[in-house]
Image (cartoon, rainbow, N blue to C red; front, side):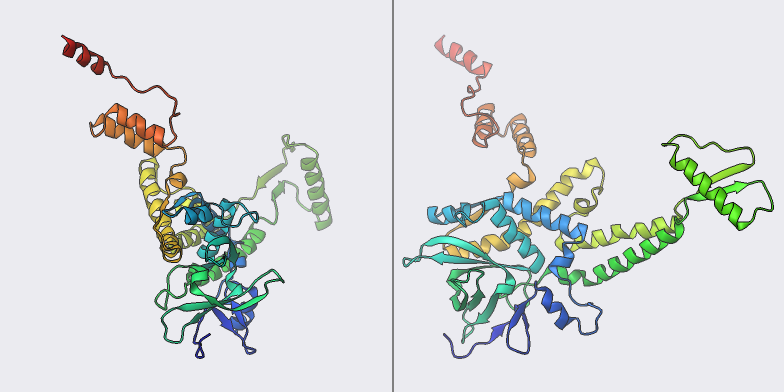
Length: 388
């Protein structure tokens, strides 16, 4: 254990020397010195925003649906079943990716035997982990508080035992920065917009409509009685038409155009969230461009996935000591629509022959293995000509 331990900030160190991770709600009381919470957005609050939840859920699910391939069989076995019986692989990896997207960092502790072989991997929340620099800044080591009381606190964990994913860094890649930091202003605007919208709606649609009667001299008590009688008629009509006499006229109120303009502000914040995570805004809003550009949107989303996937692949290569690749096709093309279209185009343009196209489709699982091989009419003719 080094004597000199400069700490790389992964959270906030309070007066008693304890570190609070940036995904811990307690950190807000320290950062929020002016009572306005202007500088920090907690992951818990962010996930209550439908746009952030949508982006994080979709990206983490698609990353977990992608296939990680390692050259070493032992490394592949851990990737395919990292926790043994704690959870399934998809749930484990989605949780890791979701934490990475929210906090900019994610940690996995490698439980290894005396021969340094991995037995199981345990996901650790950033609030459980402290990151430190070695005395000569040649590497990192960690401390961690485990949920299991039988394990408790580990003061020194070698970097080889910790898989540490991180996004954008401000210290040469030692720790990561949460994308939520860039959304602090947007969340303030969103909160203000929501309050203004609710107030405007309350003021604009307090009454359902205006009932006019061509009768003068009605006092307030009589008008109120007429209003209650009219409401009772509407409530008891079971959706049927309203019956009025010739002296009455009813006009329903509409939401004002300026209120509708306020409601449209949610589209702006949604676009800002999409921009921070580098995904097309159609992922959030469900609109985007017309059908002609759907393929282009799919390509942009694939690039977004790879930006996050590369940080994961690089760390796994480093810690597992083997080549690791990721195939995002199962996420972006789950029914092989684009793949089969490309194969058909290759065959049509003469880049591959029909037998090769069939082999590719069988190898991808799109066609059954026991499907009869393609037999071209030209093959039979060529064999007949050769025999003559």
